[in-house]
Amino acid sequence: MDIKLFDSELKVMEVLWQYGDTPAKRIAEILNKQVGWKKTTTYTVIKKCIEKGVIERREPNFVCHPLVTKEQVREFETNELINKMYGGAADQLVASLLESRKLTPQEIERLKRLVKDLE
Amino acid sequence: MDIKLFDSELKVMEVLWQYGDTPAKRIAEILNKQVGWKKTTTYTVIKKCIEKGVIERREPNFVCHPLVTKEQVREFETNELINKMYGGAADQLVASLLESRKLTPQEIERLKRLVKDLE
DNA sequence: ACAAATATTCTATTACAACAGAACAAAGGA
DNA sequence: TCCTTTGTTCTGTTGTAATAGAATATTTGT
Image (tube, rainbow over all chains, first blue to last red; front, top):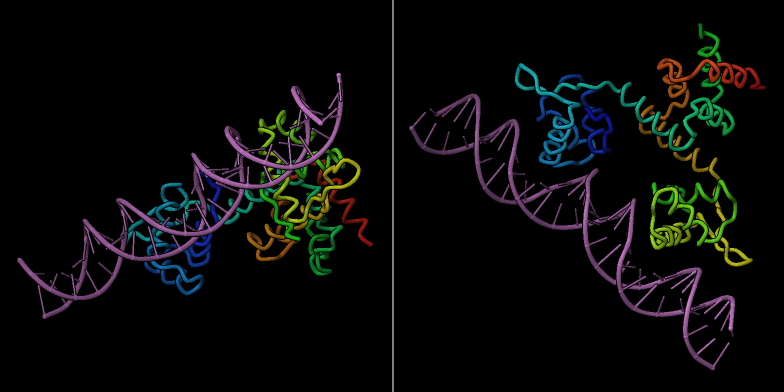
């Protein structure tokens, strides 16, 4: 199963992650409202997702069911970034975040607690 | 200046970041060895980078000079990831890293120190 | 100044993600 | 059963990143 998702595929997956198992028709409605896609576009992308193994059709009514979690995709994407931009060193990424002050004070607080809670 | 770099452009920038100001010819040699590019490919991509404003030609000898740092691009790419996959919350990304055990013990140590050193 | 070597631009080709129209299939009500 | 609606696939268009060949310009050694 190839977990690399294109932007279009991610849009579909986001719907499934948010709403759980959903009929194709419903996904099409949601994405039409959200990003203006025609229904055939949604169906095309769903098909790609099925071929790719990240969605399967399930009873009853062939609802679309996600086979990968958002966490898995997050991890994958994050690893790609770490390899591409940080030479594979995950802590470099964190260091960069801290230095660039991209973290709000609240986030820094939460981060401190996270790190403290390690082991 | 559009800081969004394609993979091909990133290859050129990596050379500049690693070696400093470099003549186009030299970049072409390096990338031919590294990734097998023909020299015209390198020149084409350099041109794109110049149009995009991330490289300029400088005296003497019109060497290629990077106008953005690796840190800037890192930050940009990291922000894109955070927005795309973590709903804009940077600390979520860090939390995900900690949970997924993608950090080695050494990295966790360094991370602790980083956090401790905050103010 | 001119030939040879080198540097650069111009123009194509290929591959594929994004998007969607039209054709086709299936299901439900008259 | 047939017609209408709904669901799905098939096929095609568009845009553009990646790559590079051919043409052109520039420099350099003699």
